Amino acid sequence: MRAARDQFWSVGYNNTSIDDLSAVTGLGRGSLYGAFGDKHALFLRALDSYNSDALEAWRSALGGPGPALPMLERHVRDVTAGIIGDVERRGCMMAKIAAELSAVDEGVAERIAEVVRGLHGALRGCIARAQAEGSLDADADADTLAGLLLAVLRGLEALGKAGATPKVVNGAAEQALALLPRVSTDEHAPGVRSSTGA
Image (tube, rainbow, N blue to C red; front, side, top):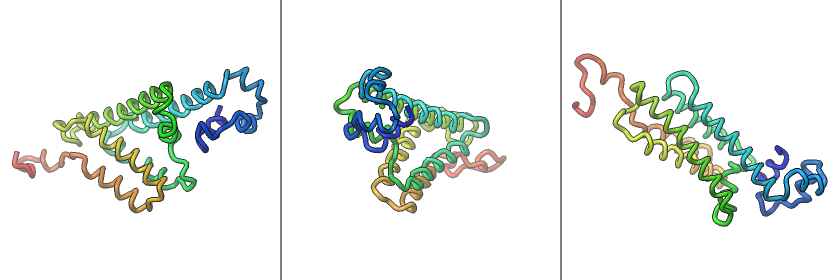
C-alpha cells in the first residue's frame, strides 16, 4: 500500500498506470485486481492511508501535553520547515489529488473535505486550549483563527512548490503567528493596565 501510495503521490492518479503499480508493488495485474478490485479502488485506499496518517500527525502535534500556545507555534514552524525542506517539491498528496480530481470525483472530494475539517478542528482545539490557559485572547474566535492558520499553511505549501525562497515561506509563517491575539503577561500584573486601556 505504501508503494502504491508513493506512486500516486509522485505523479498523480491519471499519470499512474496499472503497469506502474505492478512495478512498484511487485504484484502482477491479476494479484492487484484480486486484492483491490481496480486502480480506482486501490487509489482510494492509498489516499485514505495518507489522509489518516496526516490527520493523526496533526492531532498528535497539537493535542499533546504541555502549554498549548508553544505547541501551536512549534507545529506551524515544523510544517513550514517541512515545506522548505521538500527539495523534490512533491508537496502534500492530499493537495495534489484535490487539484487533480476533486472537481470530477465525488468520492475524492468528500475525503478531502473530511480531512480538511479534521485539520481545522485540530488547530481550533489547540487555540481554544491556549485561550483557556490565558495565553490567547479568550474573546477571539477560535474557529476563525484556526481557518486563518490552515489557509496560511496550505498556501505556504503552494508557495514552496512554486519555488518561493525559504525566506519568503518562513517569513509568511512567522507573520501569521505574530497575528495571533496574545495576552500580555503584564496585563495580569497588579496595577498594570493593558494597551487597550481596559
